[in-house]
Length: 242
Length: 67
Image (cartoon, rainbow over all chains, first blue to last red; front, side, top):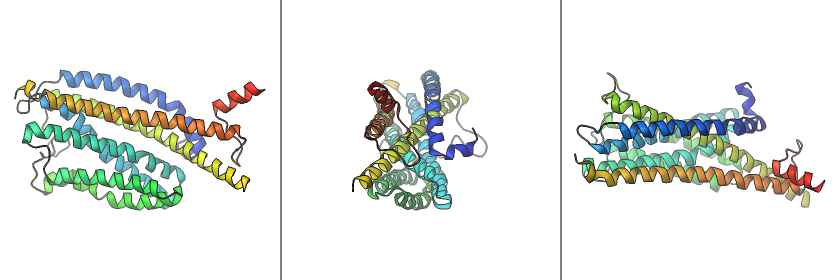
């Protein structure tokens, strides 16, 4: 099957039905291995056992940003090509991205209390991450407010592209401003500052979370296509009755 | 740093992750079930798309039972 064929919703449904069980199984296996490796990882020489929170916090932060990235690409598909599957992809990604952003904030707060002595500070990294969550909630509200899916998609696409400005702000906030949050330690010029005994489990957990994101996204897209079919049938039923 | 002192924060973080992932899985699973039931119900009432009927498994099973 060519990738272009997936632009057809019926073919996409068939692809999703075949792929979701395999992707879900693979996610489960990688998660089992990742959690095992995370639990076996040594304590950090400064942070002690609380470094185990990093195996949840960092992948959640990445996926919160990945979710908005997926929505931004889909928003271009909506505005430039006006493809309904792009609308579906954007709408399906929003709650998943919001959930991971929330998890990032919660785990960050729980990590911050023993390390910094506080659950929250209004520094640039934490605030820009909170802004991302509010943007997600705004897009979800917009989708729910406008009844016509194609009109809602265009409005949400514009908000998504405007909100994408927050992504580089989150990434570089620790470089641009003096923050309580630590600077980049994984992807940075000169290599990671994290020891491989902790870095490798982190990458395995990040892979597991990413697989989970795409499994959930595929499943949510399938649901959205079915929801639109239900809507179309109800409109046909109503027009036939009148 | 004493691990025992901070175990509560670690456990709470993993509990939050399990809760968030659990809610997401429940959301997609229950939503899928609800949409399939709605679709099957409409198809059973004879409402089909202009491009032709795409019957759900349940609608097909019910149609078979009637036959």
